[in-house]
Length: 328
Image 1: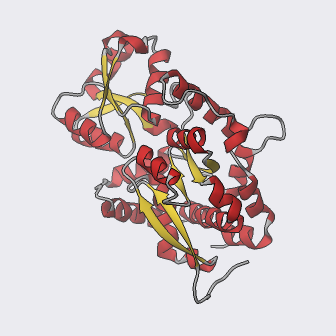
Image 2: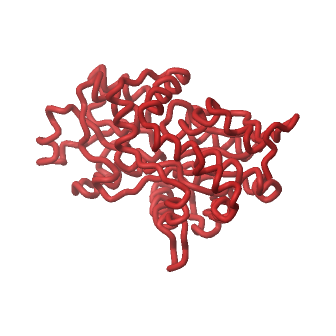
Protein backbone atom coordinates (compact mmCIF):
# COMPACT_ATOMS: atom_id res chain seq x y z
CA UNK A 1 0.00 0.00 0.00
CA UNK A 2 2.78 2.42 0.89
CA UNK A 3 4.54 4.39 -1.78
CA UNK A 4 7.62 5.50 0.15
CA UNK A 5 10.28 6.73 -2.21
CA UNK A 6 7.84 7.09 -5.08
CA UNK A 7 8.68 9.70 -7.69
CA UNK A 8 5.35 11.43 -7.22
CA UNK A 9 3.26 11.07 -4.08
CA UNK A 10 -0.50 11.50 -4.06
CA UNK A 11 -1.53 15.06 -3.22
CA UNK A 12 -4.10 15.41 -0.45
CA UNK A 13 -5.48 18.82 0.54
CA UNK A 14 -5.57 19.08 4.33
CA UNK A 15 -7.53 21.88 6.01
CA UNK A 16 -7.19 23.16 9.55
CA UNK A 17 -7.17 26.29 11.68
CA UNK A 18 -3.64 27.35 12.64
CA UNK A 19 -2.35 27.67 16.20
CA UNK A 20 -4.80 25.17 17.64
CA UNK A 21 -3.67 22.22 19.72
CA UNK A 22 -5.48 19.59 17.70
CA UNK A 23 -3.64 20.72 14.54
CA UNK A 24 -0.22 20.00 16.07
CA UNK A 25 -0.16 16.42 14.68
CA UNK A 26 -0.19 17.83 11.14
CA UNK A 27 2.91 19.88 11.97
CA UNK A 28 4.65 16.99 13.73
CA UNK A 29 3.97 14.66 10.81
CA UNK A 30 5.45 17.18 8.38
CA UNK A 31 8.53 17.75 10.53
CA UNK A 32 9.08 13.99 10.87
CA UNK A 33 8.48 13.21 7.18
CA UNK A 34 5.66 10.76 7.84
CA UNK A 35 3.36 11.88 5.03
CA UNK A 36 5.83 10.70 2.42
CA UNK A 37 6.22 7.35 4.15
CA UNK A 38 2.64 6.48 3.19
CA UNK A 39 2.82 8.06 -0.25
CA UNK A 40 0.97 11.29 0.52
CA UNK A 41 1.95 14.87 -0.27
CA UNK A 42 -0.12 17.24 1.90
CA UNK A 43 -1.24 20.59 0.58
CA UNK A 44 -2.32 22.57 3.62
CA UNK A 45 -5.25 24.95 3.46
CA UNK A 46 -5.84 27.07 6.58
CA UNK A 47 -8.81 29.09 7.77
CA UNK A 48 -9.36 31.56 10.63
CA UNK A 49 -12.53 29.79 11.80
CA UNK A 50 -14.83 26.87 11.11
CA UNK A 51 -17.52 28.64 9.05
CA UNK A 52 -15.25 29.68 6.14
CA UNK A 53 -13.54 26.30 6.35
CA UNK A 54 -16.85 24.51 5.82
CA UNK A 55 -17.85 26.86 3.00
CA UNK A 56 -14.56 26.03 1.27
CA UNK A 57 -15.24 22.31 1.63
CA UNK A 58 -18.58 22.74 -0.09
CA UNK A 59 -16.65 24.41 -2.91
CA UNK A 60 -14.29 21.37 -2.92
CA UNK A 61 -11.28 23.48 -1.99
CA UNK A 62 -9.98 20.79 0.39
CA UNK A 63 -10.30 17.04 0.87
CA UNK A 64 -9.78 16.15 4.54
CA UNK A 65 -8.90 17.99 7.73
CA UNK A 66 -9.70 18.85 11.29
CA UNK A 67 -12.32 21.23 12.63
CA UNK A 68 -14.54 21.91 15.61
CA UNK A 69 -17.61 19.82 16.30
CA UNK A 70 -20.01 22.67 15.46
CA UNK A 71 -18.61 23.25 11.95
CA UNK A 72 -18.37 19.48 11.42
CA UNK A 73 -22.09 19.14 12.09
CA UNK A 74 -22.85 22.23 10.02
CA UNK A 75 -21.00 20.65 7.10
CA UNK A 76 -22.87 17.39 7.62
CA UNK A 77 -26.25 19.14 7.62
CA UNK A 78 -25.50 21.24 4.56
CA UNK A 79 -23.68 18.87 2.24
CA UNK A 80 -22.93 15.55 3.90
CA UNK A 81 -19.47 16.18 5.34
CA UNK A 82 -18.23 13.02 7.06
CA UNK A 83 -16.77 12.89 10.56
CA UNK A 84 -14.12 10.15 10.44
CA UNK A 85 -12.34 10.56 13.77
CA UNK A 86 -11.71 12.72 16.83
CA UNK A 87 -8.96 15.31 17.25
CA UNK A 88 -9.23 15.89 21.02
CA UNK A 89 -11.61 16.51 23.91
CA UNK A 90 -11.93 20.29 24.29
CA UNK A 91 -14.50 20.25 27.09
CA UNK A 92 -12.20 21.78 29.71
CA UNK A 93 -10.94 24.51 27.39
CA UNK A 94 -14.26 25.92 26.16
CA UNK A 95 -15.39 28.12 29.00
CA UNK A 96 -16.93 31.22 30.47
CA UNK A 97 -14.20 33.29 32.11
CA UNK A 98 -14.27 36.39 34.28
CA UNK A 99 -11.93 38.37 36.52
CA UNK A 100 -10.27 35.95 38.91
CA UNK A 101 -11.19 38.14 41.88
CA UNK A 102 -14.89 37.86 40.97
CA UNK A 103 -15.19 34.12 40.32
CA UNK A 104 -16.42 33.04 43.74
CA UNK A 105 -18.89 35.93 44.05
CA UNK A 106 -20.38 35.15 40.64
CA UNK A 107 -20.66 31.46 41.50
CA UNK A 108 -22.59 32.51 44.61
CA UNK A 109 -24.83 34.84 42.58
CA UNK A 110 -24.85 33.85 38.87
CA UNK A 111 -27.60 36.41 38.15
CA UNK A 112 -24.75 38.88 37.70
CA UNK A 113 -24.23 37.39 34.24
CA UNK A 114 -26.39 39.67 32.12
CA UNK A 115 -24.15 39.89 29.06
CA UNK A 116 -21.48 37.68 27.52
CA UNK A 117 -18.93 38.44 24.81
CA UNK A 118 -18.62 35.26 22.80
CA UNK A 119 -18.20 33.84 19.32
CA UNK A 120 -21.75 32.67 18.66
CA UNK A 121 -22.59 29.35 16.99
CA UNK A 122 -19.32 27.91 18.28
CA UNK A 123 -18.17 25.29 20.74
CA UNK A 124 -17.63 28.09 23.28
CA UNK A 125 -21.28 29.07 22.77
CA UNK A 126 -22.38 25.47 23.35
CA UNK A 127 -20.30 25.19 26.52
CA UNK A 128 -21.44 28.60 27.77
CA UNK A 129 -25.13 27.78 27.40
CA UNK A 130 -24.61 24.51 29.25
CA UNK A 131 -22.84 26.45 32.00
CA UNK A 132 -25.63 29.01 32.24
CA UNK A 133 -28.21 26.24 32.53
CA UNK A 134 -26.20 24.54 35.27
CA UNK A 135 -25.93 27.83 37.17
CA UNK A 136 -29.66 28.45 36.84
CA UNK A 137 -29.31 31.41 34.50
CA UNK A 138 -31.85 31.78 31.68
CA UNK A 139 -29.82 32.16 28.49
CA UNK A 140 -32.67 34.20 26.99
CA UNK A 141 -32.06 36.83 29.67
CA UNK A 142 -28.37 37.14 28.76
CA UNK A 143 -27.16 39.42 25.97
CA UNK A 144 -24.82 37.43 23.70
CA UNK A 145 -22.40 39.86 22.06
CA UNK A 146 -20.90 38.17 19.01
CA UNK A 147 -17.17 38.85 18.65
CA UNK A 148 -14.24 36.99 17.13
CA UNK A 149 -11.92 35.48 19.71
CA UNK A 150 -9.18 38.08 19.13
CA UNK A 151 -11.77 40.84 19.69
CA UNK A 152 -12.89 39.17 22.92
CA UNK A 153 -9.33 39.21 24.24
CA UNK A 154 -9.00 42.89 23.37
CA UNK A 155 -12.32 43.68 25.05
CA UNK A 156 -11.38 41.79 28.21
CA UNK A 157 -7.98 43.41 28.51
CA UNK A 158 -9.53 46.86 28.08
CA UNK A 159 -12.22 46.12 30.68
CA UNK A 160 -15.14 45.84 28.25
CA UNK A 161 -15.80 42.13 28.41
CA UNK A 162 -16.54 41.20 32.00
CA UNK A 163 -17.84 37.74 31.08
CA UNK A 164 -16.14 36.08 28.12
CA UNK A 165 -16.80 32.84 26.28
CA UNK A 166 -13.53 31.55 24.82
CA UNK A 167 -11.60 28.47 23.82
CA UNK A 168 -7.92 27.60 24.21
CA UNK A 169 -5.34 29.01 23.73
CA UNK A 170 -7.34 32.22 24.31
CA UNK A 171 -8.23 30.93 27.78
CA UNK A 172 -4.55 31.06 28.76
CA UNK A 173 -4.13 34.50 27.22
CA UNK A 174 -6.95 35.85 29.38
CA UNK A 175 -5.44 34.26 32.47
CA UNK A 176 -2.03 35.75 31.80
CA UNK A 177 -2.90 39.14 30.32
CA UNK A 178 -6.28 40.07 31.79
CA UNK A 179 -6.23 38.38 35.20
CA UNK A 180 -9.19 36.18 34.27
CA UNK A 181 -9.95 32.66 35.45
CA UNK A 182 -12.42 29.92 34.69
CA UNK A 183 -15.97 30.48 35.91
CA UNK A 184 -17.33 27.36 34.24
CA UNK A 185 -16.08 25.04 31.50
CA UNK A 186 -17.96 22.65 29.27
CA UNK A 187 -16.59 19.79 31.37
CA UNK A 188 -17.98 21.42 34.53
CA UNK A 189 -21.44 21.51 32.95
CA UNK A 190 -21.34 18.06 31.39
CA UNK A 191 -21.03 19.41 27.85
CA UNK A 192 -18.52 17.20 26.05
CA UNK A 193 -16.82 19.06 23.19
CA UNK A 194 -14.89 16.79 20.82
CA UNK A 195 -12.99 18.10 17.84
CA UNK A 196 -13.54 16.29 14.56
CA UNK A 197 -11.43 14.79 11.80
CA UNK A 198 -13.48 15.21 8.66
CA UNK A 199 -13.56 14.33 4.97
CA UNK A 200 -15.65 15.42 2.03
CA UNK A 201 -18.10 12.64 1.26
CA UNK A 202 -17.30 12.51 -2.45
CA UNK A 203 -13.55 12.57 -1.87
CA UNK A 204 -13.75 9.79 0.73
CA UNK A 205 -15.89 7.63 -1.56
CA UNK A 206 -13.43 8.03 -4.44
CA UNK A 207 -10.22 7.88 -2.38
CA UNK A 208 -10.77 5.57 0.61
CA UNK A 209 -7.12 4.51 0.85
CA UNK A 210 -5.93 8.13 0.91
CA UNK A 211 -8.36 8.85 3.76
CA UNK A 212 -7.09 5.81 5.66
CA UNK A 213 -3.49 6.96 5.21
CA UNK A 214 -4.42 10.47 6.36
CA UNK A 215 -5.86 9.01 9.54
CA UNK A 216 -2.82 6.80 10.03
CA UNK A 217 -0.46 9.77 9.77
CA UNK A 218 -2.52 11.79 12.26
CA UNK A 219 -2.69 8.90 14.71
CA UNK A 220 1.03 8.18 14.39
CA UNK A 221 1.67 11.80 15.38
CA UNK A 222 -0.70 11.44 18.36
CA UNK A 223 1.19 8.33 19.46
CA UNK A 224 4.53 10.10 19.14
CA UNK A 225 3.32 13.21 21.01
CA UNK A 226 2.17 11.07 23.93
CA UNK A 227 5.55 9.34 24.05
CA UNK A 228 7.63 12.52 23.65
CA UNK A 229 5.84 15.30 25.59
CA UNK A 230 8.86 17.54 26.15
CA UNK A 231 9.85 17.71 22.50
CA UNK A 232 6.19 17.96 21.53
CA UNK A 233 5.70 21.03 23.75
CA UNK A 234 8.67 22.72 22.07
CA UNK A 235 7.15 21.96 18.68
CA UNK A 236 3.80 23.33 19.84
CA UNK A 237 5.36 26.69 20.77
CA UNK A 238 7.02 26.89 17.34
CA UNK A 239 3.84 25.83 15.56
CA UNK A 240 1.75 28.45 17.34
CA UNK A 241 4.36 31.12 16.63
CA UNK A 242 4.22 30.30 12.92
CA UNK A 243 0.47 30.95 13.10
CA UNK A 244 0.96 34.30 14.82
CA UNK A 245 0.13 33.16 18.35
CA UNK A 246 2.67 33.44 21.16
CA UNK A 247 2.01 30.98 23.97
CA UNK A 248 3.82 30.80 27.30
CA UNK A 249 5.42 27.67 28.65
CA UNK A 250 2.59 27.46 31.18
CA UNK A 251 0.02 27.76 28.40
CA UNK A 252 1.73 25.08 26.35
CA UNK A 253 1.80 22.76 29.35
CA UNK A 254 -1.91 23.42 29.95
CA UNK A 255 -2.77 22.43 26.38
CA UNK A 256 -1.32 18.98 26.96
CA UNK A 257 -2.86 18.66 30.41
CA UNK A 258 -6.39 19.85 29.65
CA UNK A 259 -7.04 18.45 26.15
CA UNK A 260 -7.04 14.66 25.98
CA UNK A 261 -6.21 13.08 22.62
CA UNK A 262 -7.00 9.53 21.57
CA UNK A 263 -4.99 6.64 20.17
CA UNK A 264 -6.23 4.37 17.40
CA UNK A 265 -7.66 1.89 19.91
CA UNK A 266 -9.32 4.65 21.95
CA UNK A 267 -10.83 6.20 18.82
CA UNK A 268 -12.25 2.88 17.70
CA UNK A 269 -13.85 2.51 21.14
CA UNK A 270 -15.36 6.01 20.95
CA UNK A 271 -16.92 5.19 17.57
CA UNK A 272 -18.07 1.63 18.36
CA UNK A 273 -21.79 0.98 17.92
CA UNK A 274 -21.84 -2.61 19.19
CA UNK A 275 -24.26 -1.74 21.98
CA UNK A 276 -26.19 0.98 20.17
CA UNK A 277 -25.20 4.62 19.76
CA UNK A 278 -21.48 5.26 20.17
CA UNK A 279 -20.04 7.77 22.60
CA UNK A 280 -19.20 10.04 19.67
CA UNK A 281 -22.77 9.67 18.35
CA UNK A 282 -24.09 10.88 21.71
CA UNK A 283 -21.66 13.78 22.04
CA UNK A 284 -22.33 15.16 18.56
CA UNK A 285 -26.08 14.57 18.78
CA UNK A 286 -26.13 16.76 21.90
CA UNK A 287 -24.23 19.48 20.07
CA UNK A 288 -26.52 19.19 17.06
CA UNK A 289 -29.45 19.74 19.41
CA UNK A 290 -27.83 22.96 20.60
CA UNK A 291 -27.35 24.06 16.99
CA UNK A 292 -31.03 23.57 16.17
CA UNK A 293 -32.06 25.37 19.36
CA UNK A 294 -30.14 28.52 18.37
CA UNK A 295 -31.15 28.33 14.70
CA UNK A 296 -27.76 27.42 13.21
CA UNK A 297 -29.39 24.49 11.43
CA UNK A 298 -33.08 23.76 10.95
CA UNK A 299 -32.83 20.00 11.45
CA UNK A 300 -30.14 17.91 13.12
CA UNK A 301 -28.66 15.18 10.92
CA UNK A 302 -28.79 11.67 12.35
CA UNK A 303 -25.42 10.63 13.77
CA UNK A 304 -25.18 7.49 11.62
CA UNK A 305 -25.64 9.57 8.49
CA UNK A 306 -22.35 11.43 8.90
CA UNK A 307 -20.20 9.79 11.60
CA UNK A 308 -18.35 7.12 9.64
CA UNK A 309 -15.95 4.86 11.52
CA UNK A 310 -15.18 2.61 8.55
CA UNK A 311 -11.99 4.43 7.56
CA UNK A 312 -10.64 4.26 11.10
CA UNK A 313 -11.61 0.59 11.30
CA UNK A 314 -9.74 -0.04 8.05
CA UNK A 315 -6.61 1.43 9.64
CA UNK A 316 -7.01 -0.92 12.59
CA UNK A 317 -7.62 -3.89 10.29
CA UNK A 318 -4.56 -3.16 8.14
CA UNK A 319 -1.40 -4.78 9.52
CA UNK A 320 0.72 -2.29 7.60
CA UNK A 321 -1.15 0.85 8.65
CA UNK A 322 -1.59 -0.16 12.28
CA UNK A 323 2.13 -1.00 12.49
CA UNK A 324 2.91 2.41 10.98
CA UNK A 325 0.73 4.12 13.58
CA UNK A 326 2.38 2.40 16.54
CA UNK A 327 5.93 2.14 15.24
CA UNK A 328 7.85 5.21 16.36
